[in-house]
Image 1 (cartoon, rainbow over the protein chains, first blue to last red):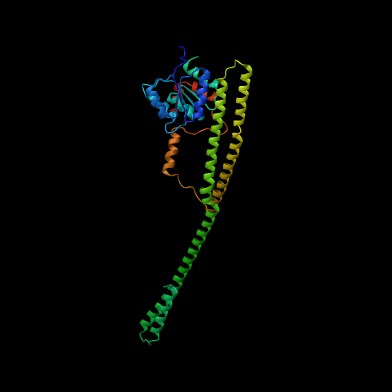
Image 2: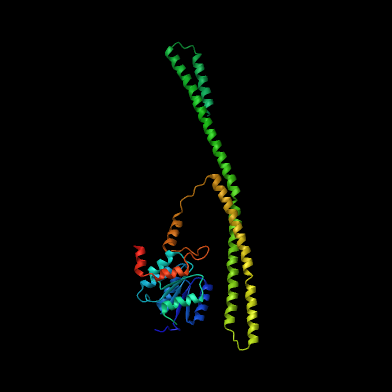
Length: 128
Length: 222
């Protein structure tokens, strides 16, 4: 199935600069319909109001972390099938395993580049 | 009343009783024993006086040394000067890097949005944007100097605290309940922050883990 390039994507990060970087990289890849949230709590509320084609989230945020957002998403029937990519500086093996166990679709370690982001998105969504 | 003075008064009383020309042998024996008891008590209480005196002297010396060590620690300098200045320097670093990043990203975004119809004008605009990006990179020099100041302050504090702990034989107390709760929260949420020296698990290893079958991941938790 072809990827809908206009699908809404939710970027969750408490650092505005990182949101801006990801937004620019997404634009380069061809996705411009991007919303942003600054922590897992705000993101979850937004997800209840709008259906997103992909969530790209940081891990380490306050008060609600990206890991908790992932757990909340996978536990909620209305949003549990939303593709979820973690982009984080948390690079311990235990983090990757915990995220995988919680149902993450892919995991990108910071710092990263546009090629990595595109490859992981393609792995999750299909080629575009 | 000091023990020596009490003993002297008892001795004086006994002496006056003795000089009263007593005939009763039993009473004289009792007086003799009382005399011995008084002398013994004087020695006993005298020894106690001396040991208490020595104890208080040692405590006073320890307090004086502690005060001296605390003064060497210079806690007011740390609390009022070193820590606030270090905090302000780090905040300045965050602000300067944020401003520089904003400039760099804005220029990059502007360049990406340029129309390249007129090659000459396009090059001039790109050159101007690149110059502004290069100028913005000056933040690294300032940030480096500020971080160096913070590192120097931390080293001063570390040396003073280490000296104090070594001299006073300080043992670490258990963490407070709040600290333990926060540590547990960070552990359960896997909050470690960036690793020093680059990612602890590279993207290639992450990809390998992600490629594992879910049952293999589940088995790790059994």
